[in-house]
Length: 453
Image 1 (spheres, rainbow, N blue to C red):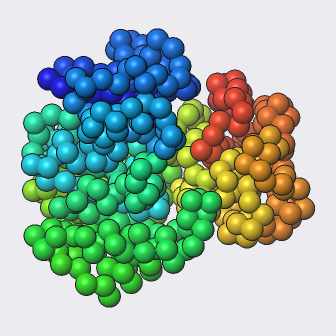
Image 2 (image 1 turned 30 degrees about the vertical axis):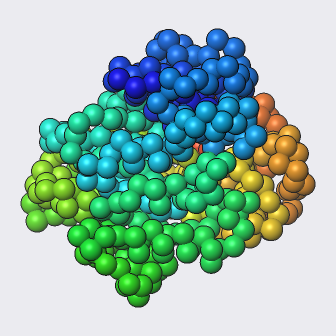
C-alpha cells in the first residue's frame, strides 16, 4: 500500500478520492484552510480529517509516494513548495485518476450540460447488470457511498469536465484521461469568467474529440449544432456514433420510451433527459450490453441528486429541485416540467448564484429561459454579487434580461421564504433551481407546506 498526501483535501471530489484510497488500505493525509460539511464529517469518520486547518510543510516528507494537488491550492502553497523541494511526485486529480486507470478501458463523459446525469445512468445500468467498473462522478448518487470508485475492474466511467486541472496545469481536466470512448453531450457558454472567449471554449471540446484514438469511439449528440459540426467536419480518428433524443410519449404525467419492445415506463422526463438517456445507452452498447439489458435496468433509475430531484409530491402537484443555473440548463428544465404536466400551474424559482449569472454583460443569455413558467421568480443575494466584485442587478434590468415583465425578484432569503410559504399550491408544480441553497432557505418547511396545500 502507498502513502498519499492531499493538498486541499476538503473539496467535493478531492475528499471522495481520499476516502476511496483510504478504503483501499492506502495511508492518506491531507490539509486545507477550510473544510465544510459533508466533507468534514466524512473525513472525520474515516480518521483522515486534518487536526487543524491551514498549511503545514512538516506534513510533507520523503516517505510519501505522491502528492494529490487540488485546484483550491495556490501556486505558492508552502506544502506544495516543500513537495517540489523533496522531489515527491505531484499529481493533479485527473492525472492521478489516469495513473490509476492506465490498464482500463476509459470512458469520458463530457459536455457543458448533462455530464452527471449521463454518467449516473451508465453507472446504474452497469451495476444493475452486474458489470464490474470503476467510476468518477460529480454528484452523490443513490446506491453509491462515494463519488469515486477504484478497484481492479477492467473499465472506468469518468465524468470529465473542461475546467482547469490545477494551479500548476492550466489545461482542461478531461484532456488527461486519454479516453478510449468519449461522449460529448453539448456545448453551451457558461462561466465566462473562466472562459471569456467562446471560440476558445468550443476549441477545448474540439480538441477532446480529436484526441479519440483510431481504435476508440466518439459518441456525440447530433441535436446540438456545435457538437455535430465538430464531430462531422473535423478529422476524428475513431468511430463516430451520433445520437438524437430518444423517442418517448407522455401519458398522465408519466414518460414512456418508445422502443421495439413496446412502451417502457421511466422515472426521467424532458427532452434533455431523453437525450442524456440515449447517449448513456450508446455508451453501454459500446461496452457490450444489449438494448434489452439497458431498457430493463433504466426503469429503476430515479435520477442524480439535484437533477430534477423529486422533493415531495401530492395528488395535484410535484416539488422538484434542480442544479440548473446556466441559461441552456434553466430553459430545458423549465420546459421539461411544463410539458410533462401541461395542465398544472408551474412556479419556477431560480437563484442567480454564479459569476456569469450575476454579470450584467452575460444577462441577455437568459432571455426567454423562463417563458414556460406560469410564475417566474428570481432570487439573488447582494452580498454574493459584492463578493464577486459585481454590481447588484436591479429588478428592471433583470426583467429586461429575462425578457419577462412579470418577473418577481427577491434579494432577501427570508422574504422569498415568506412569499413561497404563503402561496396556495393547488394544481401546481414548484421548481426550485440553483447551484446554491438560497442562503439556507428552509426547504423542509416549504416541502411540508407544499404537500399540505
